[in-house]
Length: 562
Image (cartoon, rainbow, N blue to C red):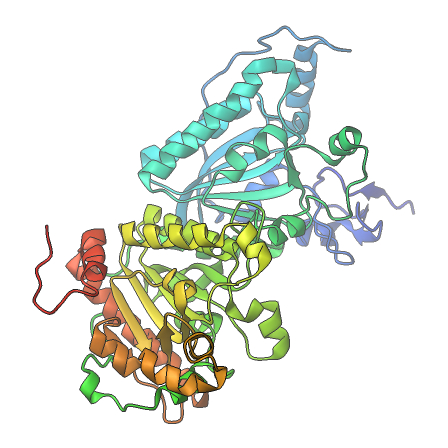
């Protein structure tokens, strides 16, 4: 009996043949390879999928219908290289059964309706010509007309040279179409598949709200060969891969193909409406009268706020939110692991949660830089807040940091500017904002996430202009006087509630939040729900938020100018 061995490149129907993985060259039984969505079980290599296969993989069965795309110019330059462009077009159409490199469909993923533009590398290497540009633009305009999210699946070698400057113009055309969706407040998502280069990467692929990639998918403006020929240097291993892009803050995450449909479903859920009775019936544990609080010595609060066992931002998020999708990167070349954020459902309400992230063990603390953000952390948080504003999502921030990172690289990259921009942005957000100081609230690094409609604080947390040790070293000339400085700084919850810096205090379990993290996290969740319920009902917006901070420092009863 003869056994047929096929290479992994390209797609074939399920068959009793053996497929050679394009990554590791292992042989995989053809039917099994198809069931695995063309992912090698040995090395995890993700082989290319054509557009029809991709649509079948992602969309709910029976939900897909094609969206018509207007006709475009055919061979506008009468281009001829070794063969006429018209012949090449006809061959590509016969091979794929498609008019061009992009299919546009209306369908559902996890029950949520959306529009998708799906690129097919088989057709001229997924190159961006007038027909492809028109298809992506039509997809965006259809999403706009029907008020639906837009998904773009990319696979492209770049612009189509045979169509000259008309191909180049598609970059601006598609970018303008994405801008209209931004203005309309509609969610846009890119799924980067291998490869995504040139004019596609430098236009619509990277302009969406959320950019995710398959493992090892490559994306960049210039390909490795062009770069090496230009600079006469070999690019490093892993350069421009999805993992490289994630590390450098250029994509939100890397999602395996087997998880794409479920994760996209969770992400698309944020486009839904919350129940009209959201938040009703949830009891509020917040204490708003400082006289009702047990006043611990300030230095004791400092020690409890720094306790390594307190729940982290990601632990709070994991406890509160359904379908959380973490988003990464500042989109400018960096990812800061000291700040985490993403979208999820809080009792049925879609929210954006952003927080400082520390850890419990020494290794975790080092990995997260002890919760001290770089400028990239604040720029990431700003990006997520702008996304929340666009989509109309309330913002919840969880503050737990000794302060912004005071290193040389942070200064070189504009730490002060990044913090200042966050302060201004948070004051302007057109959506409800609730902040909770869950541990340490250190200086401007904390306030950069703290300009909110309601500012809450855990009972043993602290919030201060400087650390007690820093204050003692400067004013007492002796860091050993930190306990005295802590008391003088009034950094404890009772003092801050009395000053009006915070609006309420969340009680902690006896002995501190680290003794019962589940109980503390649930109390914080209930306090956040109650605060959001109140702020959403009031609908005060930036004017009310700015007025809250405008009052600080005025004498009692002094009137504000309007």
